[in-house]
Image 1 (cartoon, rainbow, N blue to C red):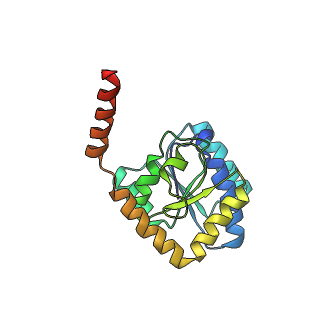
Image 2: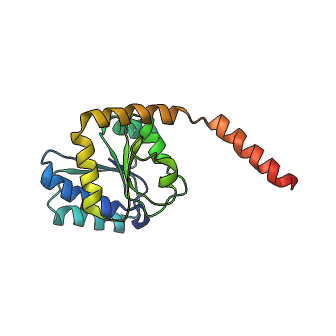
Length: 178
C-alpha cells in the first residue's frame, strides 16, 4: 500500500516503478494507492501504470475516510513510502498502528520515525530495485515480517497525542524563558 498526498515529492512514481519490478517476481502482488492530488498528476500516474502493464494490479482508491484508510493499512502487508523528504512521516505510525511495517527510502523525517530492521526497512540511496527487493525479501521472510509487525504495533502504541503535546509545550516554555 502507498498512502499519501499524490505529489511528485511523495515519490509515488518511484513506488509504482518499484512495484513494476516487484510484479515481475511476484505475479500475485497488488498495489493500493490511497490519496488524492491534482487530476493532471493522477492522470500521469495512471499512464505510468498502464505503460508498465500494471492496470489490473494497481488500485487508485483516491481519498478515503480515516477508518477505511486504517482498514486498508491493516489488510496490507507493507507500506511502501517513496518520499524524497518528510517532516515526520505520520503515515508510517498510522501503518504501524495497524501492524503494517514500512519500506522507505532513508530520507530526513523517515529516518526519524522508522527503526531500521525493527519497524521497517530503510533503503539508502534511491535505487528502485533495491527498494523493491527489500519489500520482496521482507514478504518472503515470514518470521522477520511477523516480528516487524509486532514491533510496529508496540512502537505505535508508545506514542500518545497527550504526551507529545505536553512534551512540545514543555519545550516551548523552556525556550520562551531563555
